[in-house]
Each structure stands twice: as structure tokens, then as C-alpha cells.
Length: 317
Length: 274
Image 1: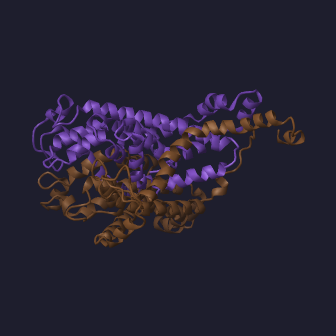
Image 2: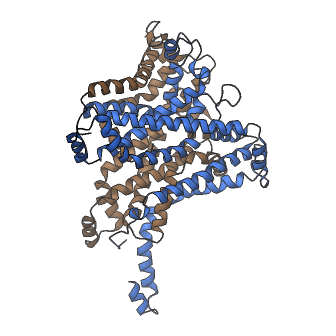
Image 3: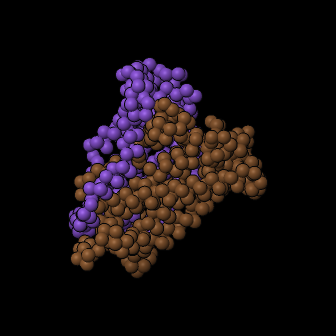
């Protein structure tokens, strides 16, 4: 079509238009709804976050925010609790990650070392915390950690106090970890399954013990999946606060378990009409947004992107 | 692993031991929902069907539970349907059509798939207020469906990629339009993918808490997650009713779990984001 258009430029108008229409109309129709939603709720919010973080927006000035430059960021840096919140965030991400990846790995190794039927059943059980509605999942945690004589944890440990108010960090890491472990479990399981069977037979013929097989064959093959799960969950933990909000609301007491993302949320949205510190909350969120963009672009570079975008084999639209 | 270790029974026992907390939690929920008082995992009071009185009376100024149930059903079904249709259309275009900016679009989808969308909630609050969609069911539906689109597009692209070109070429040569081809040929052939994405989207929307909790304030638009959460904030919680509401809310999920374990495992290990 194109070469014909070039050859007869004078009469080609309608032809070119028809060709263009045919070439772009189909992709445009197919992509329109997704594009509108992605622009409206991903791209615009990214810039809105950055913009709002540089205004004095609050419940009072919601309709008419004034430009404030870097004022919010200055306030943020002077916040006496900033250090504590950053420490909490590091603690939350670090320990939960350790539990997630470690537990996921242990479960994957165990569940692939027992007959398939049992392995699948156990993996399904670990899927439960993930598919249960978060509020129901936290309800169970609240129930198990009630003070004596109701809570199972307090009757097992002999402590009178509620587990959540007594050991808030342990509760948060365990509750998050039990959900997150299934992510690693499933990815590691499929990675273990894709290891060539010959390797296992060869190891057995050489008289390798189970532990040796795991150390010398399985673990080296899991290097990339482990890296992927770690990288992926670091980013999602850094911004997640749902379970903390439901378990401890950032307490007990003053900022005991408040992490960065929860603090941003509380500053901006802790009452129905937005908060007096909406702009400050936006500034904290902006930090997460920028980190999120940088890290997710990095993922794209690490994964083999070119292979994913092979050109379509049919050129007709 | 193809060769079972000699002491696999011991390993199974360890595995069971690690899974006990999850099973114990479930038993606690069942017992507490049906008995008066539960100490640990032992019922200390009598059978208490009155824990379920939220079904026939309103509790402490909350709307009737069926309002929340209806809203949750609408929310989950509309979000899942929209997500499956819109993601499939976009995925088909990325997988099968040639247009400028195609690899850029795919790159954007991939980046957004990894990008943590919760960090955008504050800005989305502002945008919903500007659009007049704050505190409406349609607003939260749009937000939830949009935030999961990158995942859906990515998943469906994988399914469209694996379709054979020959069948499509034949249909095109016969003069079928792309649009007809998509609905009549491509979509039926990726049914396993549609089913997987629909299941995932339904489960995810059914359990969604933060989005409706943040963007819905009036009780007539409340969802089950906020209804249940309202029991959590009371100073002296009636755990019997709390657990009964939780059980009621989780029935579809538990049923799906009991009926389709293998299916769920396949979906969640098939590269769907957690």
C-alpha cells in the first residue's frame, strides 16, 4: 500500500487515508479502553502525586491549593519521628523479606520432597492466607492473639497479654510473612520442577545424599528465582501497609509500628475529607512513587525484554 | 524431585508442623463463629447461633449486611468482567497487531506490573474527588479494575502469544475482520486464560479492602470488607459475631478452595502476581 501511495502522490489521498485507517483503527479500538484507564489511574496519579507534594493542599485548601515548592519536603526532613519511621520501615521490609523468602524456600524444598499428592495439598494450604480476604485473615490473627484465656497463642505461651499488643512486630512480620511465603513457595516449586531430571538421577548414582543434592544441584539452580522473589517483594513490601493498618494501626503507642507508607496514608487520608497534612502525605508518597518507578524500570532491564517483544508475524490489522 | 528422599515421611511431618498455624486459624474461625466462648481452640460456652443474628437484624448502626453483600457482589463481578474484557483486548493488540509504539506500550505495561500501585492512593483520592466519583461504587470499581490491568494484560498476552498464526491467517485471508476474528476465534481459544484471570480478579476484588475503605464513606455503598472491619475497631469486640461475619464473608472463597485446589494452584503458580 505504501509504495503505491508514493508512486502516485496526486491521487493517493483517499488510498493513503484508507490504508492509515486500516493500519491504525484496529489497534486504536483494541487499546482504547485500557489506555484510558491506565492514563487516568496510573500516569495522571504519578504526576498528581508529584504536583500535590509541592502545594499546601489540605482539607481547607482542597479546591484551591497554592504552590509551596519544596516546603513539604523540608517539613518532612525536620520531622523528629522521621528516623523512627525509617527504622521501622527497614525493620518491616527486612524481617518480612527474610521470613518470606526463607519460609518459601523451605516449604518449596519440603513439598517437592514428599509424594506429589501431599506436596500439592500442603501448597494449597499455604495458598489460603493469600486468597482469604485480608480483613478475615487479620480477624483470625486478632482472635488467635487475644489475651488469656481466649487466645490460642497466649494459652500456649502462658502469657496473659494479647500477642499483638505484647509483640506487635512479631505479629506483623508473621502475619505478612504467612501471606508472602506462598509467592516464593510457588515460584521456587516450579523452578525445582523444571530442573532436568537427569541431574537428580546422576546425583543418586554418584551416591549423593539428599542434603548434598539440594546444596549442589537445587540451590544453584534457584539463584535467579530467589533474586527475582527478593527484588519483587522488596518493592511491594516497601509500599504495602494493609496488614499493619488492620493489625496495629501503627501502634500500640506512638509510631511503634508505623512504616513510611502507612504514615503517608495517615497524614493524607486519615479522615473522610482528606487531612490538614494532605500535601505532606503526598510528599511522602512521592518518595515511594519515585523509588517505585526507578526500581520497576530496573526490573525491565534485568529481565530479557527484547525476547518479549518479537514483532507480530502477520502485518495485516 | 523425581527421587523421594528415604525419610520423606519425616519431612512430611515437618511440613505439616509448619502448616499447623494456618489450619489452627481456620478451626478457630469455625468454632468461634458457632460457639459462645472459645478458649484457645476449645469451646467453653454453648452452641451460639445468635452469633449470626447480623443476618436478620442490623447491628449497632450498621447498614443491613445484605446491602454490603450486594455491593461486594456488584463490585467483584463488574471489576472481574471489565478487567478480563479490557485486558484481553489490549493484550490481543500487543500480541497480534503491528502498530508504532508497540514495544513501548508493552514496556509500559511491564513497568506498571511491577510498580506498586498503592503508592498512588493519595493522588487517586484527589482525582476521584475532582471527577465527582469519590464515595461511589463506580469510582472504586474503576480504580480497582485499572490498578490490576497491567497484570491482566501481561497474563493474557502470554495466552495470545501461544495461539497458532496459521488459523488467524486463514481467517484473515477469508476476509474476516480483526474485530470478528478476536471475538469469534481468538477469545474462545484462550478460554483457560480468561478463566484464570477471571478467578484471580474475582478473588482479589472480593477481598479488596484498602480501596473501598479509603474511597467509600457512606454506609449504603459500603462493601463486605469495610462492614467486617467496622467490628474490628470496637473497643469490646463480640468475637462470636465478628467471626460469624468473617465466615459469612469468606464462604465463596472457602468453597472455591475446597472444590478447586488444583485449579487455584495452577493459576497462582502461572506467573500471576501476588
